[in-house]
Length: 215
Image (tube, rainbow, N blue to C red; front, side, top):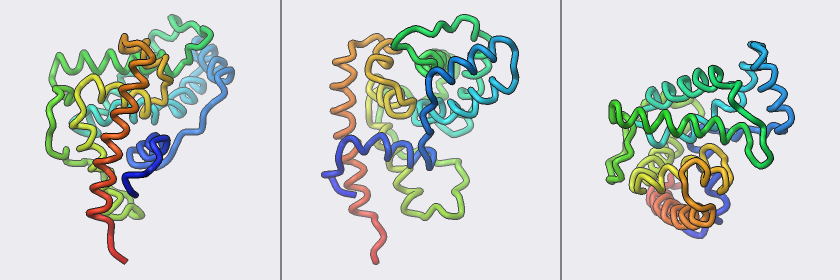
């Protein structure tokens, strides 16, 4: 990887390092069908919603947390809250279910910060957070260290920018959907993402060039 890596590759890199695979997008009409079934108490529909959106929720919140355990707690809390409030969701033009779901995640995260400070959102650079994930057998040391480098790079972003990056690339929201969640104009969201992507890719590129295995 070099500093010239196309900026539009950042989302794919984020997905690969945080979860090892992307999530296949679901047709929104199918999602609405699952939502309607979940409203009727269909457990299979709830399972479909959880299985499809668990990774986007995790990717959106993991870089903000001290550990995977904290992130997993927020993921679980998000779905408990979402299923309890699912009657309140309204399918509107331009408002996908995932944006409604991640608004819940965002609000839960902010409350968790106020309650316990377990989320790292103080805007101060920190050393790499110890990764409590057990690496898979096919994940080499370089891949694991690059994933940690992403976590460290994100930690150097301030609270607002880090949250926007996590919602935009982790959760896969559009600039308009992030705008609705954080209260900034879509044009500002795009500018913040552009600046942050450049900084993050530069840091990751420098790390990769210095640490890539030889031979």
